[in-house]
Length: 304
Image (cartoon, rainbow, N blue to C red; front, side, top):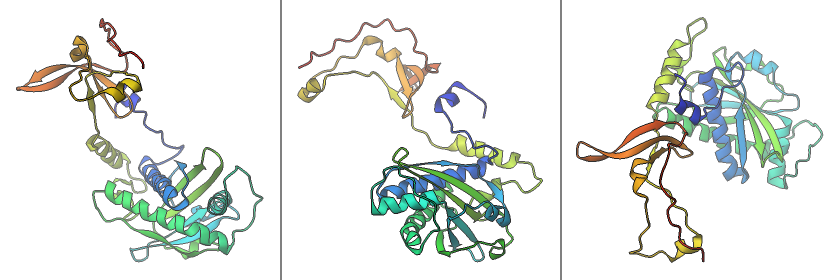
């Protein structure tokens, strides 16, 4: 998409180094699912960031797994479609601590995972995978999407356990309560039925197809804009005294200084007008700079 003032103001999150943007977006969905489920299953707020997400082979993924990690084999609805998810030791310890104690930022010494670790972590992983499928299905407008669940623990994962099919490698970093706990999840899931497969380039194929699809998806995505006539600050005491029949003053020039805003910031300036016998806002300026305003400050109600 062409660079513009509005695009800069929306502050899109950059892709991780060497990431495939299409797959990297999928990793963001996994992180969002984990954050949502964290509040319900772990009852704790967590933030997630995705590492470089890319297409991979089972052998390459398993070779990079952490030592002393907790590895769950994944199953899904499509026959022959299986995957693997790995929790690093830090995440296992964090989930254990959240469920059995209080996070205090203490780092525990490395140890092999136990059956108790698996029993504590498994409900969180299964709920995360279900929420991942729910979100992805919604983003795909109801198109079929694989629903994954943990099948069993793999003590020593091997590439020979998995079919020779294309896989996606997704990595998610977790931050619990602003640094009081951390961890990382690595996922290997099949490409088919999981991502917008028509947008993923085949080996040796130009990536322009999926770039065009992503541009179309972004351009078609709905966004809410609020046209703000005027903002007025009042003391809380005065607001509590307001009743039906009271009036609030609006400067005369307010009709020429409308603000068109997203949920976080003002994107454009406009003035009130009329189009085809309907009220309309005509854009006068794009960007954050405030046009000159000769209005005098509105009279504020006295503090109580």
